[in-house]
Amino acid sequence: MLSKQVSTLEAAGYVRVKKGYVGKRPRTGLSLTGKGRAALTMHVAALREIAGSTHSHQ
Image 1 (cartoon, one colour):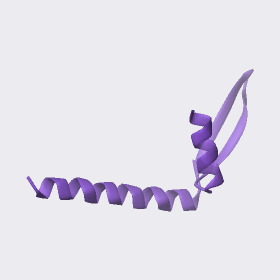
Image 2 (tube, rainbow, N blue to C red; image 1 turned 120 degrees about the vertical axis):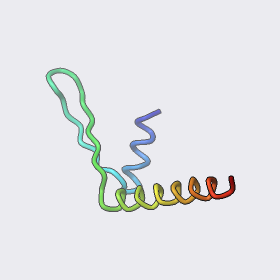
Image 3 (tube, rainbow, N blue to C red; image 1 turned 135 degrees about the horizontal axis):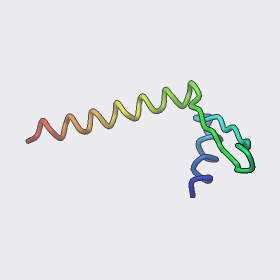
């Protein structure tokens, strides 16, 4: 499941994937791209707006 999500994020240009080994164990590293960081910032802002609008109705 996770590998499919990572592939989708990588195809969208949101993350960079680095695969390697630590000893004999495979390791996968992810880093946000500029596009990914911008998308995350917008998503968090939208969630905060939703959460803020919920509190104003109570």
